Image (cartoon, rainbow, N blue to C red; front, side):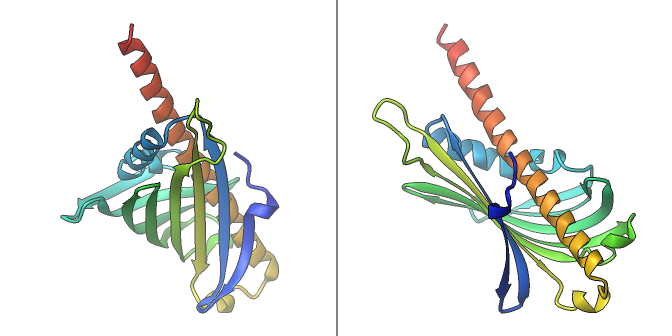
Length: 206
């Protein structure tokens, strides 16, 4: 999955500028199967494994349905730049008749910076994975559409720490590439679950 320039936007919000990153893909699977595969992916640890190393993790399932609180430390990287960060994240699923949404909200702070460019790597992350029936579906074959959106906002005082526009540009590029890698992990994780499920179903019919 490639992130193109049209998928990345820098927008101005009430709290300052933020990055907005999108991706879309049509999956050759039924909506019910796709929504369950998406939730299985996000409620587990697989979502952390494909982009950096996971060091420690604490997870709490709340009494509320489809709600998880996580706190973990992991390595994040983008090309040759790396940092260890501590994240606090809430993941929640919303089930609707014609679509399914998994939303996550996280705060990220560095614990060890291995590159000077990443000294201000403190940011807030909001995102969602939306699964719905694709408009390309036919009476013969139902297709699902998987959409990802990430909203990344830096600390408001980051401009004071970055007096060099090149450093700010490098940090922005780090976040964009890292986000693209995360999206790729999520998408491939969900697709692999669907493929495995389809193969098991075929074997069960023989």
